[in-house]
Length: 566
Image (cartoon, rainbow, N blue to C red; front, side, top):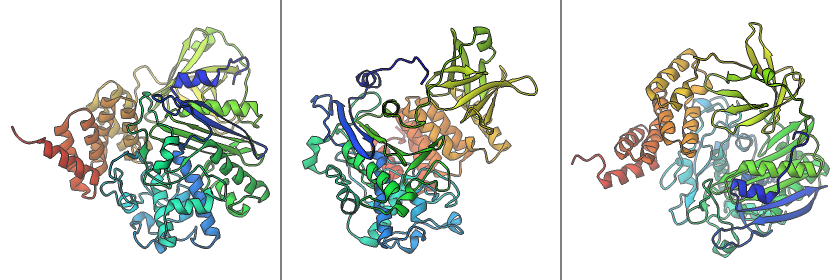
């Protein structure tokens, strides 16, 4: 916040973002202070959202599931730090060079540091064939996600992996039998009074009338109202804001006074203490805001988003559930709650110190961020505007001594000349930080490889990326995973050609991987080039015969007669 900023009503921001409905629960002093619902659960029927309306919690399913696994560990049914393959019986996580010295454990899987693949899941349209858990683990039909494997050393670094949670589910089933929905009911949902919550997928028919319809960023409804998520533990929870507030409060009470209904304090502390990396715990992410610690977790399923957040010690928190894919809106709502309820250090407020246009002009230009990213600084009237690639532009507000802040994040940016007299931007997490990253202003004729993608110069971009890789094999910006993520990010934003070109670059740089051909084929198919899609799906299938999705599409295209001489 900048002193003097105006505010909006919730209804105004729902309209701005295209959010049909929302449910809020505000937590204060370890109690639900109030709940309120806004908008409609379905824009056709115009039925209003109520406190009992069901939303998909998406990835918020993970911390609730984590609580259940930690309870099983307390009961001695599973071991958090043992090699999971010692307990898995109906399926084994494939061993390889990465697991030779470090093993995959339950705790590492729940904390996203086990080195497992598959970031998230796209779900299945209502009525589509649903895979079993074993199908999902192996990437076999009718699963629409690849096999879950280990491709980096367990325990070495944090990387989000919904796939890892599926491994945990299989271990629970092998150790205890039964079903994940029943275990979740018995271990967490029932003890916490979460009576309007279930991990059953598909949602039981008797509950359908009370479930919100999901809406996409283009404001259209999800086909069939919602997707089905058979993975369950990473994404399968249907719930209400009130029920999730019970979860947040119980965790807070457990941590502060050992008075929770599920876990002991010693066990629960694993969910709010750093594990391998500072920002992540077991099952939750954590934030330290000048000594004030918060835990949180977001969620995104097709047509649904959610966010839970709580202070580790003082009993303040909130739950937001919406039937839209607009996380920025949820951030605005949570920050408004934080200001109204005086959450310590959650929303910093700064006072602007104006600078004249001549001073601002000295800071404009293109600044390099790593080897393949940049941010452009321009002046618009008496304001300095920061424009990152593929992100929202925002004003930089001067607060003194050439230091600026943005309303879009909590960082400080100081403009300063280096020893050669060139302008730089020092990006800091705290205004007095000793450690900061420095962005150098680029020359007029200097370009990053992605700018060639933006200009449609695919072959020149491929050469530029290849040169970048040759200069530094370890550069994350040319990794297969980063380029694959970038390609899908572009396609999801409607930039199909740019996404396809990034996948093409990935084939040039990482042609030994079946996945790069699969992604390029998918882009070709979306752009209507079925012949090229068939060629590359076949390449992917020849390198990875277990790719059920590629096999299915190849069969469909050949059945259509694609690739047959006429």
